[in-house]
Image 1 (cartoon, rainbow, N blue to C red):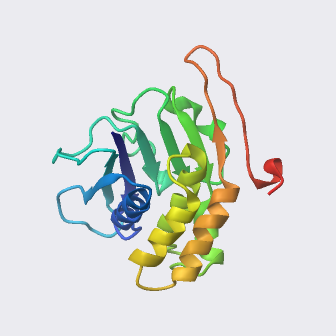
Image 2: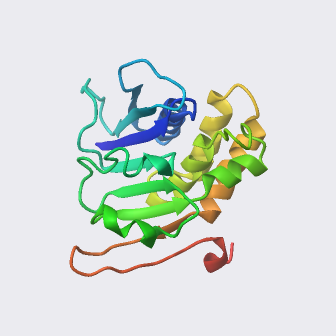
Length: 203
């Protein structure tokens, strides 16, 4: 089973991100479950959403406390919230940030990926400059960094699940897919860092 936890702020679309990614997994043959943390969502307040994907029907009905991967839509949550709580060793943590992955080495022995989803959202007209909607961009980056779900499945899920700006959201996901940078750590004692983006790969 793959378990993913999303961290964001109210209004950023963390719940929508988990739902869209669940649909992308579904298109690749997985059974899925997507749900928000219980409680009232207030704009700007920290929120969580969860996703499970498995080759068998998902029976669990509880929050995810030991995720395989974590997605952080707002970098200001790092330090304010324990975003790595329970994250499995060598799990992926994907952060919306302009910084390189090694800026987050202090978070622990995890695979780190960063993408400036905020700038991608702004240039595609998603939300506003003061409140960009970064959820679809972050999903494209997740596809590339983890390799768990294809970008075509993500783009298809975006077009199926979103009500407006389908083209712009799908484009943002594909741009983030090419722009994400990631750091691969081979062991706890030895770090193999590979910063990769579209320029490195010649795409």
